Length: 137
Image (cartoon, rainbow, N blue to C red; front, side, top):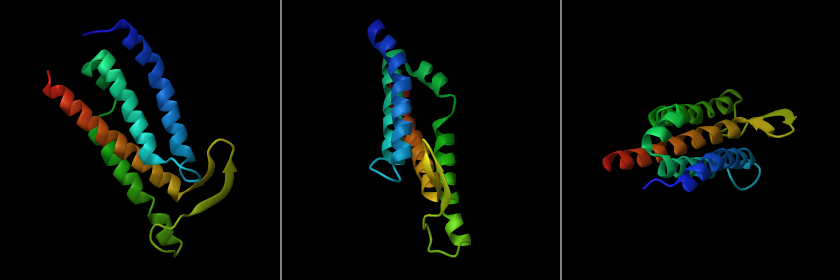
């Protein structure tokens, strides 16, 4: 059953929820939050859009296959471990740059790892949601 109110609300809520998920991602290496929670919030935003507008519209809006998001997330998580090996530190030790950006904060390998986890969780959750939705067709 199509609802004009839910469809309209989802168009406004999707960008707000994605911005909130990005906020959770960026604050994760200093405070509670991070890639896992941010990815779940982003997946929930796309799930809301799917419920309101249908699976075809949600897949068009995503513009990337969930499997590609999963692969990119895994690659970033693996790449984030390399700087600690080159620095002669323990495996997966955090390597930080000396710069401090106003909105992002410090840049380092934990942020790269968090982005990888974000994409991985988003891809897995959307793959599950889209697969279950296509079974109902």
